[in-house]
Length: 211
Image (cartoon, rainbow, N blue to C red; front, side, top):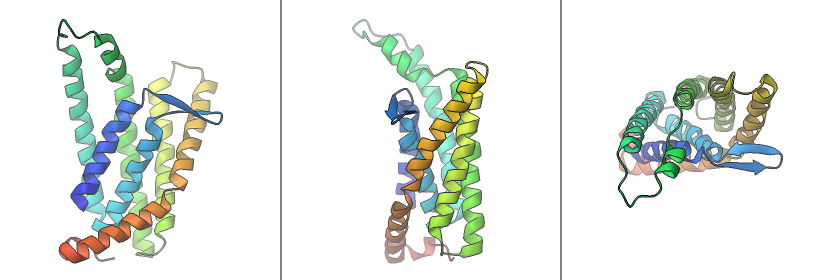
């Protein structure tokens, strides 16, 4: 199951980069559509770490980082290719896929820091509690790392572009939205962990980490 969980993680990560151009409202909070998808990546690394161990979770994070870099390179190349005479959507294509260097930098930095922080907090708590209190490490690691992710991304992407008051408002509103989504994923963490352990106990018990 590890390879499938990693595939879901990487797929959702790439999808979040595409969906980030769409904004939606949740009450008075404005969020990018990527926010809901991106939060689930933290659930996936928590499940991977719980079942397969810290090294496996870090490998998944590193695979996601490398995939993002490769995706950005190929997207850039695709944008630069001369459009066919019958292709009338070049401007729209560029608008959706051509993020600025600053946005790309903000995305990569916030991802690298927050995802590694998530894994570190999760496994620090796991060493203390063993298999108990999955709900605690799932929520605490995700909510803490999401705070760093939000602050880093918005600060790097928009510092000096918008007034400080607007910048702070963006950080608070986006974190509230991410916090809300993260708060409801704990039952899914238990479900996926149980499913993965049963599968590996049956098919590849040597992959399971003693805990």
